[in-house]
Image (cartoon, rainbow, N blue to C red; front, side, top):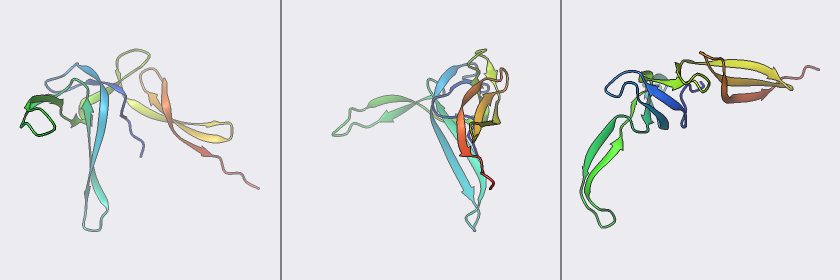
Length: 130
């Protein structure tokens, strides 16, 4: 399954205390819930966005680091962010487009609002029939 939000994307927060803020995705965290057979039954995806959902943590001094109050970005649910369209600079949904190019089947990530291709998701050679 291809990811709609990836590390390095520029996103805007749609819900919560940081609504309207934009930032770069620093990290994507996936957690899988499995049944007794080991099959994945639920996937939770959270993202860490630069400058969003800031938290403070009191850190005790160690031999290697100084103590004090450290500020860091906490993860937020992926459903609360939307990708910023590179053409219109507005929030957009993400879709996928499969195109045949030079003997390959290429899958692109596409911004729904403007139709702009964002990046290549996969590239597979077409099967040659003899």
